[in-house]
Image (cartoon, rainbow, N blue to C red; front, side):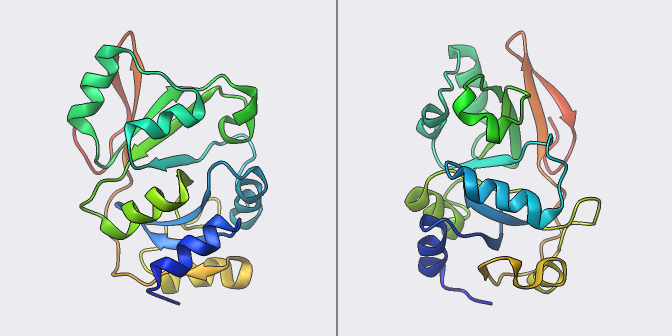
Length: 190
């Protein structure tokens, strides 16, 4: 277990997988643009192959990497919500990212801000990361690094130490006719 965020950045850049505290819960992180590493997380978690992961970003420009263009109205709405504990499902029809959207043609994104300096800096250096909660399929999310280590043992490349995370998961929303619809109420009430 470590507090060396520079080492975590290096591991992710090389295609590794880490467990780290996010803005909500502990997550199992990998570079979102590395298909092989994303698939590795599915195996580690024992996750259903058809369930997409949330992708953490640090700026609106990160959405361009996935071919996502917001309407002016969507941009205005998200500008009031992000950064924050709100994951937004956006349309992503590119076959290039099928390994992320798993055929749903949508990806959920959450913007991490400077209030979470270590994670924000990591995403700035590595690029967007997938960040499902640190648990096995059907299990409770790990509240600390020790619980995560019980789930994953040596199957991940690094565990980042942090304080216990007891937040609810992010609130999950989607645009319908340029209005937000809450699909899962979580850490933030809308």
